[in-house]
Image (cartoon, rainbow, N blue to C red):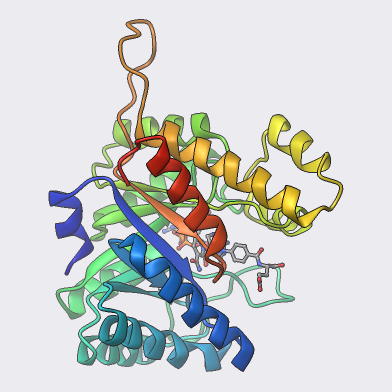
Length: 303
Ligand SMILES: NC(=O)C1=CN([C@@H]2O[C@H](COP(=O)(O)OP(=O)(O)OC[C@H]3O[C@@H](n4cnc5c(N)ncnc54)[C@H](O)[C@@H]3O)[C@@H](O)[C@H]2O)C=CC1
Ligand SMILES: Nc1nc(=O)c2c([nH]1)NC[C@@H]1CN(c3ccc(C(=O)N[C@@H](CCC(=O)O)C(=O)O)cc3)CN21
């Protein structure tokens, strides 16, 4: 199933993101989480593509096994990091051989310890180049990333949006947003994207906070803001993991409910449509995402 076709017939879509584990224990955790999340019938699940050579074939193996054994539609992430055009062409052949037809095309983060992204010799510089490269090589459905609060390397939000339009025009079928905690930032970005002529669906990227220190580190890196109200609540948990978990879950559930059911009937409110879908960054764990689905179902939000 091509994700763009699912988006044409069913909205909202729901998807879960996983990463290839580095240890055998991590491997067991991933498959247990996948089994526990499968009953929520996600429209697709995605697997990230690590910077290290070893996790690359793992992405391929994991997506193939998800398709074969769980019958869930997978999406493989693919990045330009450390890869020549020949490497990328080979990976695309391998994906084609395994009948994996959905790809998230990314430039990729600089390897750990390096500040800036440097294109590999004979490789690609921007995600837009990867999108065009994939388009030439097969009937893939292509997703790409976007940044409601602007990519940290971009000079300003207008420049970032200009390059996003350029990337979408290279052949992107849908976008997945960087994680965010402020729905207003996402709605504002979606509106600006439409005004810039971007018409593909933009899925909202949501990550339930389960560890305060970790999320502070990551949001600093990726440029997402933690709203004062959430920050205060998390500070109040004083490192109690159960309290952090329920704070993160309630916040994300509330965020999803608002994204899926925009208020109606207020003639003064800026109109904003319901999001076309939500992509959950699971970090290979299942309890938070399962709890959010339970809450949304109890609140009669269609998931
Ligand atoms: N592994 C994952 O699941 C995800 C990873 N990311 C990471 O976020 C980072 C960015 O990746 P992408 O968004 O795919 O990269 P991108 O190439 O679309 O954009 C990266 C930066 O370059 C600028 N840019 C884009 N095209 C340009 C052009 N033609 N000329 C000049 N500047 C241009 C953008 O404004 C942005 O600041 C990476 O570090 C990526 O790995 C983001 C989301 C998900
Ligand atoms: N720039 C960027 N790179 C990414 O790889 C990426 C994004 N953005 N945004 C969307 C998702 C979110 N991703 C994330 C988000 C958080 C952690 C994180 O906090 N990792 C923990 C370790 C997690 C674990 O092993 O349990 C850490 O402490 O860094 C990692 C990847 C991966 N994706």
